[in-house]
Amino acid sequence: MNKNIIKTDALIIGAGPVGLFQIFELGLLEIKVHIIDSLKNIGGQCIELYPDKPIYDIPAVPVCTGKQLINNLLKQIEPFNPIFHLNQEVLNIKKRKDNFFNVETNIGTKFITKTIFIAAGVGSFKPRELKVSGINKFKNSQLFYNVKNINFFKKKNIIICGGGDSALDWTLNLLKIAKTVTLIHRRDNFRASPLSVSKMKSLCLEYKMQFLIGQIIGFNINKEKKLSEIKIISTDNVIRRVPLDMLLVFFGLSPKLGAISNWGLDINRKQIIIKNLETFETNIPGIFAIGDINIYPGKKKLILSGFHEAALAAFGSSIYIFPKKKIFMQYTTTSPKLHKILGIK
Image (tube, rainbow, N blue to C red; front, top):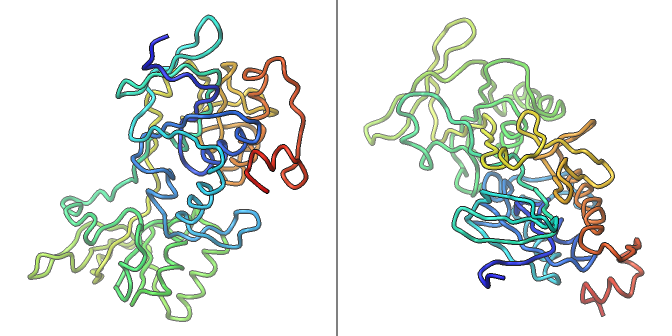
């Protein structure tokens, strides 16, 4: 065999929270892994888009930020010494006659693996940008499509544009530190949690923030050539000028499956169809899909759902990795074997 080819039992594509937890679940079964991600940092959307955003629905963790969640997952998988291959993208996957897979990345890294776990979130992604001519020259100085350092917005006049969970979550959280917060959405209907919407509207009634219905159509700059105002057209065609220091835009992500669409997987609306809900296996035996990248009846795009899928996928993969070995369910609280694997004395 070519010495430059990496042979492994399991290859995970995607180093977000679900991909990281897949390492843990495979590790408990003594399955060593390599993990690939197209981003230069571990953590997926949690790190790239909302490292400081509070997350409230991780079991037994009342609240944590995206960065804290990733740091805790990295600590949890330390006993397993996973090998990461970052800043590279899987281009080709080909099944071999021995039922293993040949995998190659865009920089020429080659693998032979028994199993593949696709935990690629929404695939390659980038935030949908505001379509106002010339405004992107203020990107990362006054215009932002994500929040990487919440303190940067302290005591600022902030305008937030969007109607989903990210827009509402950041509206409520930045209100605690900003000088003023104004939320703009093109209509009075939201895609966000009803509880968040209700809280936002209550704050408006208390004059603690503003909500305007309309769309941004232009902007003005001051003598220092900084963004000073945005122009909003409302549903009654009245144009208003609203002063600001910072503009945050949350229009969602523009997902692209990229090379994934060429691997022979059954796909519906840019999501991989799950064929077996007991194992989260795809139409290709030995390839599993977990997290936001997959779709099946009743699917909920939640991190905790991805964790559940990772656990079942790990057990499902054992027939390929240990075809002659019976795998028994063990509990980390009582199993001496798992304690040894985890380094617990």
